[in-house]
Length: 279
Ligand code: AMP
Image (cartoon, rainbow, N blue to C red; front, side):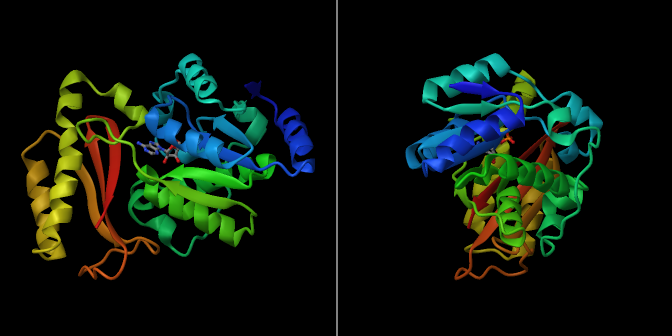
């Protein structure tokens, strides 16, 4: 496994492989790798000749300085995991290497999908995500790139980005990896206190109940149900939304012929957790 911190060295190395028509798979991450990330890397290894994983905590996608500062880092363990699964290249650039002295996002329009849910609660988040993903796509020029459904809205934004910017890359969505108690794996989980960790499986449990209620209750009744459930806990419900999968527009009534999904964001103290489930 080769590790790069300079983009020109990586570009040079990958260009030699592309001359030989090798397929490159790419998995962008912010580190603190867990089995969810691992599943993306394994899929890339299985379906491509070479796999590049980036580890980069992208400052422009954080709307809260505190969240960025507290983002955990476990580089040694991350590299061990990547080596163990058979990753070929790891790209760990500095902020300056990517942004030079201008740590700002580009502005994008993704038909409005960037303004719902995460976009509404984290202003500028998807401009930051799209800026870094486009920058990585332009450096790595992957044939295929893998994103988790854990961040479903991000996956849809990246698909739109590739379409709008004419980037020749296949964007593949991968299923959510969960702990045994249903909690969606997340790098942020390591920051939970013991008490919070014991309480947060409630998020997925409630999500599952809400989805099963779609057969017998109206959308408004389900919203009310979820709100009341969280009122009995010390978790702070930020949003619960049922939306169509492609447009991410909220639905008032569920049409079972269309793909809809329930989305949730919850704060456990200062730790923000998201999850979603197909209906
Ligand atoms: P992050 O390091 O949080 O930026 O995540 C890097 C990639 O891993 C993103 O495409 C995430 O959606 C994906 N990912 C994170 N957690 C999970 C999970 N529990 N299951 C599947 N994919 C995940």
